[in-house]
Image (cartoon, rainbow, N blue to C red; front, side):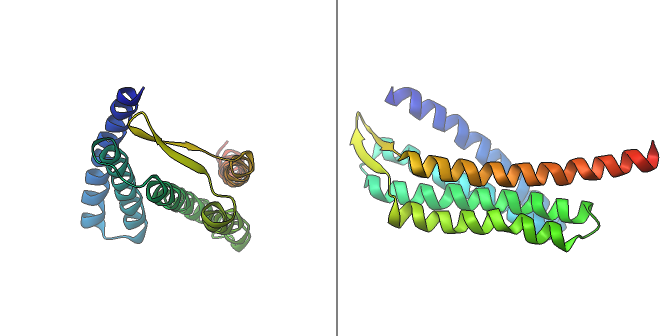
Length: 170
């Protein structure tokens, strides 16, 4: 089971490395903040998968890996949703309503990082050569609710843009 996890994470690391190189080259050519965000998100993926792989070779404190992964995964999620929110904002004629309402789940994700680390921390233990983590149902439900809310709102924004284009262009 540990070998499969290492193989699976290795494939993910290769994908993140490729994404980092592509995003980095686009950012260094275009020098736009949106490309910097995408590049930073890809680099976070490389760091997290590297630490996960390193854990299978060298004993690293599982609590450190847990906290690092909570921060990296949720920060990368915030960055991705920030890019999508910016696109929805621009696509909806720079609507402040879209920006304000779309920011609420992002602020919720930022608060979620603290709640997940301090209040409702997961249980983690080193077993069979890897850190095994067990999250509480509450944390899973909160994260799922935040992601669902953000995705539903952003999807509605993009569908509205498509609908407007369809009405105008036929």
